[in-house]
Image 1 (cartoon, one colour):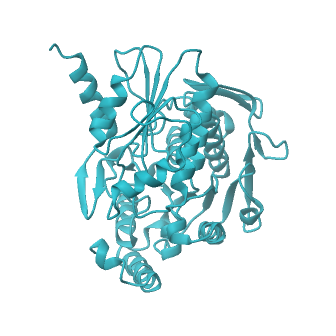
Image 2 (cartoon, rainbow, N blue to C red):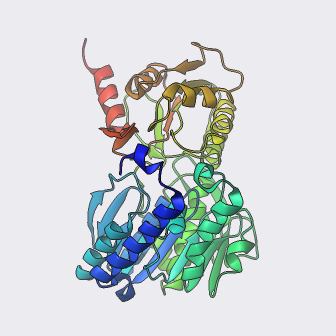
Length: 420
């Protein structure tokens, strides 16, 4: 449906249509989730990485696994990119995916689950064995209106599941724990957690920690990725996988596309791509970079904000980035139908201690913004390009323009190195 027309239809009406589509599609495809063990992973941030890690653990343990994530669809080792710009497919698309997975002999399915999909009834016909919550922080308030409604939407996954994995370090975990019929908890600080990361050591190239006397050498950086590994391990143990097997599996994962993804270059700089689209995700990312920066290191940030989404978070994001980045380049992300200049105005309103055309630039063309960011780098500097991750398109109005941050960065780096 055209987005302009869709806005005229009350959400309640659309939800009835979504739920009906989900049930009719389940009937059409023979309720495929009933023949598999299904794990649903929800949360504001960390869903994609947790889903990828859990899939790896289950595969290493000999299970045939299907994965549906923001980044990709994977069935028994065969993978294709998710170009839909949806975390969770619509009812028909999801049931078709699960049917294909069941026919391919998959015994397990790992699904990223969005609050929108839960609220709209798109998952009404899916049987869930395990629900995982990574966190709940500010996001999607354009849709849910309040944090309480946002959390309540996510809670619907736990009403459906037989078992739950809950992050004790998140805001009000009790809400989800109270819904759990069988539960496992995890934490990086709380000794009462079932899965507690101890002896934690962090760096830009990875992390190490100990869980139940088992060493976890994690090749993904950041404390947030330790949390993701704990969540995946906790879910796997509920499904009969040992902690030792989980440790071996997660140690092999060197990359989740678009999540703290490093881009090799000849500049002697560190270039990172990350999906971070929420204040919490940006805060964690910049805290990590700040903690490992050396004297003289310049941090350059290329970012913006999505259109037709929660406008209140934009100045917050601007303030978070400006607290750490030395130079900020504001640029388009996914404007959708909104005025791109208004989006950047609202992000800029939160930026502190930056001077226009010296430490703060507005370059709406994202390729030109990335080019500018690269031109400012010296050896040892850090460039962070956030907001798009591994996405393959940019949404401008009703159009979807081919776009991939990594591809553009590599093209611009090649152009810089080409002889004049």
